[in-house]
Amino acid sequence: MKRIALFASGSGSNAEKIAQYFANGTDVEITLVLTNNPKAGVIERSRRGFGCGLHVPVLTFDRAAFHESDRIIKILKNQQIDLIVLAGFMWLIPAGLVRAFPNQMVNIHPALLPRFGGKGMYGHHVHEAVVAAGETESGITIHYVNEHYDEGQVIFQARCPVSATDTPDDVARKVQALEHEHYPKIVETILRELS
Ligand code: GAR
Image 1 (cartoon, rainbow, N blue to C red):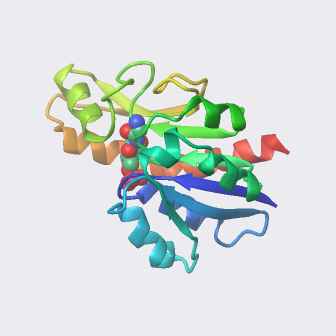
Image 2 (image 1 turned 90 degrees about the vertical axis):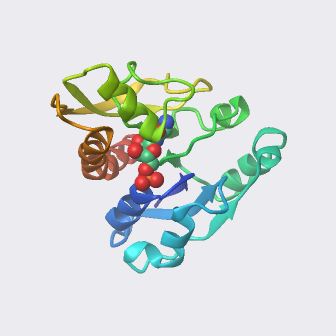
């Protein structure tokens, strides 16, 4: 049995896809959802069983608990988490947490890193920058997490075309489709490699 903790700050559509993907299996458990945002959509999704009857406890934390104490690390260690999955989590991960879970923390970024990454490049800002730069393609990057924004080792990328008439919303839709298609499967592959 492998145990996953999901971190999300927003809507939580990726967290939901991952929960649904593993809901019927017996070898992966989504143990805990963690969020820094008491208004995050992921809380409501979890309350509704992620649309698949899977009820996962949600832990909400503030900046002090995350950056100035080891409370989160202790909780994750106590729960024997094998893999931390960031799914739209917007805070930088403190070095102590990175060190506590070496190569056991992954993130998804809505662009083709190393381009369109770094501080301030998240969510819709990324798609706006891609369109403003006249890019002809965008995509997703799944990568290990280190203590810098979007700089950990790349595990997987997938691409989508961007046409001259695409708006940031159009790009967001294409990228989200890629995220939902690939993130759960890549998480499964990473978990298999951990054993
Ligand atoms: C996703 O597009 C994810 O790639 C992005 O936030 C969105 C969350 O959507 N993450 C980042 O920008 C991290 N830098 P969701 O809440 O619907 O899963």
